[in-house]
Length: 315
Image 1 (tube, one colour):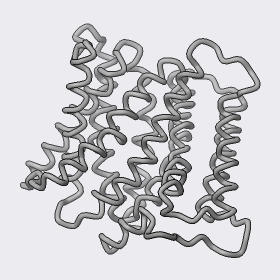
Image 2 (spheres, helix red, strand yellow):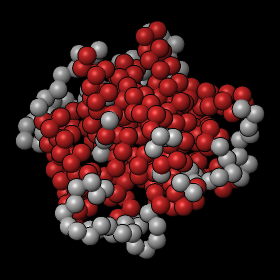
Image 3 (spheres, one colour):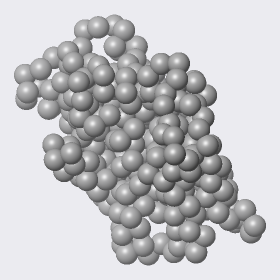
């Protein structure tokens, strides 16, 4: 833990404040512009790191195929969904939805029969669903696009759940490429995808009329929240595994609240932190920190994505 914990905590701080930068950027930019520009900035930083480290991008066409798939579910879709959703919900609420990622990861692995549906896991998923309903405040009407914004952010967390399992199976366990090379390859693939999508949608790739404040936010989002964060993500996943790394999302609402409430003056209703607490308890149930029975969960029909990554990288 001493090897990866500092990078893990740095990732929590960076990603927790990414929602703050997104909130500022979507005040003037189209969601696709936010996604595309953060990807370009992040990819540029990692490509520079590859050159400085005198490394080379992968030549394996199969790996580039995996990059394309991973980019769809880990960057292209979720980045755009979060940017669209934060037009209607606060940065803190977006971070709370992001905290459901471990539940989404588990639901995906259960669907693939890579994990056994134990009582604790099923109870955790049910409790997590209840926590989502509390965050949404289903007993009260939602103004404007709040429902759509929340569902968009939850959809982004679902994408992360799928993508985390995919990365653990096909990318992060590789020993022939350094983490910076893998991260650069994925972000480069995502930048190309978003460039094509943005152009086809008829949205300008760059908005030269945006204020300096917005572009400073984009530099923070792309440089730290994308470039440096993805380098840390690949490194921590290689050291600690996919499932352990996904728990970084527990901490994001804390840092998001610090910047959103204190700096942006965002307001929280009682049900949002209450629902977040329920979701965290649900995650603890699914991961065995709280047990309903004596028997611990064991994988069936093959290794879990986390164990697959661990086995292939001797973690």
